[in-house]
Length: 96
Image (cartoon, rainbow, N blue to C red):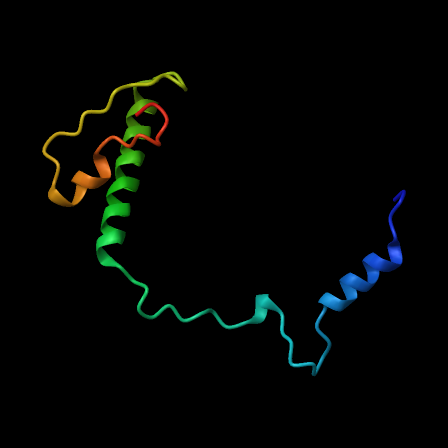
């Protein structure tokens, strides 16, 4: 590699490799972080509703052979209270 200091790269790579008995461990071998207190059932429910909606829209578009890139209006009828915030048009979303 032209203009590359191989010795400098080698020292950086070696410095990042933990030595046996150094107390440093590999991230791949580290225990999974504890996530207590981070669960939010309402947020999971709202995101789940959006994921299901997107999956269904994609399935219908595929079954009806709607061309890629064709914008088709979506009308949501009979929204449950939990879905109202998620389904209203967003100004930052392309085409909304």
